[in-house]
Length: 187
Figure 1 (spheres, helix red, strand yellow):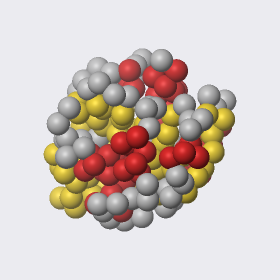
Figure 2 (cartoon, rainbow, N blue to C red):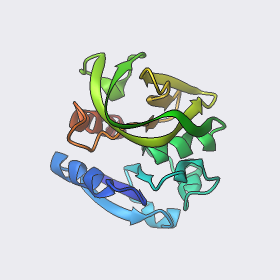
Figure 3 (cartoon, rainbow, N blue to C red):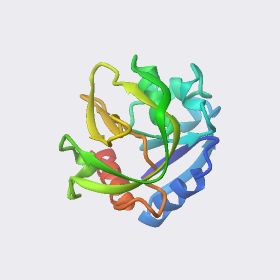
Figure 4 (cartoon, rainbow, N blue to C red):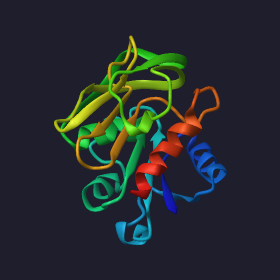
């Protein structure tokens, strides 16, 4: 399985790559300006986090093209999640309460991404912005007291977004979340 980690300038992009490699996936970090044609062998994509406010931009490299033209499962993390929401008509804005550190989230909708995991778990947050309105055709999967949209998925396409960082060791079940995403990618 080939997974490209799209580098949006986040501080933990290499950790996303490392977790995927640890799981046994052929993973490669590529710039977010990489043409779609050069990713034709992808089985899945991870849209990494990014610098502050990057998820609020109308353009994030070629991430819009990946979401529009690539028919593979895509996991957006932090800024990648925010950009995905905005691309599909949702809203992202500065958080009323920026989060940094350990936060308890609650899975509010059963989904393959959280298969076999407890309903409540501790995750690692590092964000000043957040999704404030889900796009149409997206389902809310997890929430926290200060951030309603901690996880989402498209209702028919294999598109997932996480506000938190599953790649950081302080996130409980982070590796399992990646494994569940990869299981969806195999379908």
